[in-house]
Image (cartoon, rainbow, N blue to C red; front, side, top):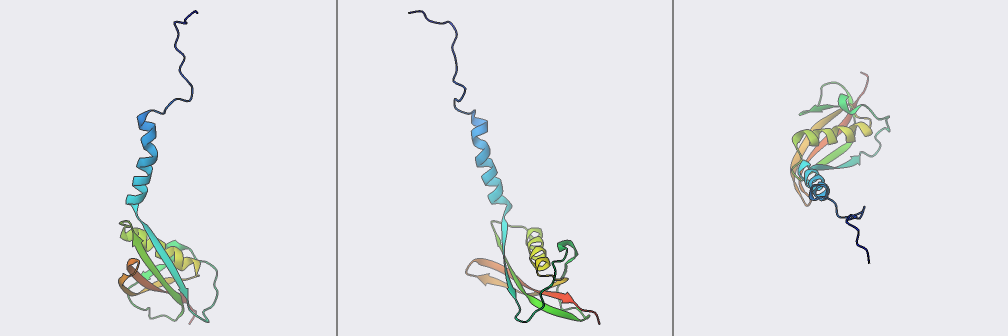
Length: 127
């Protein structure tokens, strides 16, 4: 029997340790970044409007003086340490999908799914 002086390594051997840890690091970063669960509660009889631009949706602490139509409520529940910016972005996106021009703060509290904040979605009407 002749032995070859060359050692052949299999092409599909175990991955280096750094490569094996990449999926774990990605999962940890995703968990740390947080997420926001939004729920929409359309108002009965509210008009069905075309979506608006989320960047243009105003976030207000009190009802505006100008005339508006109530479209419904949106509840945001932050998860995993979501930032205030993430909550606001999620609220704007949900409101824009309803055709809203603005969000008006309603209340915040603690529910079965954790802390939440609730806003009313409104659309401005011509005077």
